[in-house]
Image 1: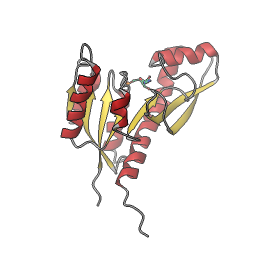
Image 2: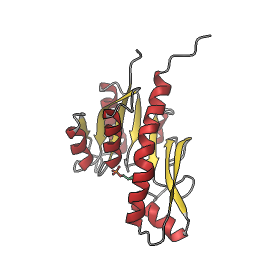
Image 3: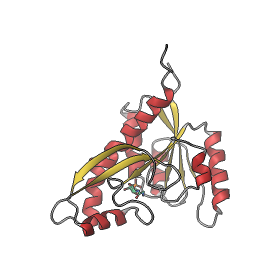
Image 4: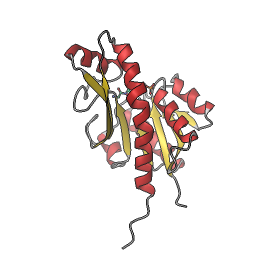
Length: 205
Ligand code: GAR
């Protein structure tokens, strides 16, 4: 039996995506990975409480008033202490520097609440994404799990799922539907895909 890929989940807020990753793990849907650490840049993130309720170590590295370089130094140290193999940004709303991202090639997954390349990039996060989709009048939106490269919300797309926009939708209603129908389904699938990839034995010749 190969060792499992050790996963750190980075969060900033409510942590519903984290919750669904943990539930998937508890249901046995993450057989090649294990969530070993949750990191928040925000001390009052409810995601930290969720991690504790599931018995997963949770730490806060306060982002506010901390220089980026120092924040990333502390983060790198934690990831090393916990022997982390890959990272999942699950509603982690801070930008990581190019220098940090370079150290984790194809090992940082992010979930974004739209069908990239629509409604992504600078300023598009959380409810703002759904406000923009409704303002544009698109009939279909969704969610994307992608690798983080140098550009935020750039990088290779791993999985996408479409969600219908319905008459009368508000940003809040749409956000809830995108989470339920796409984000909470896709993120555990993507975590298992990458965990499987990283723990796979090289093909025998
Ligand atoms: C999620 O909708 C996630 O897709 C979004 O923030 C929310 C966090 O919710 N992320 C972005 O907008 C990234 N650009 P959660 O804390 O309940 O998982």
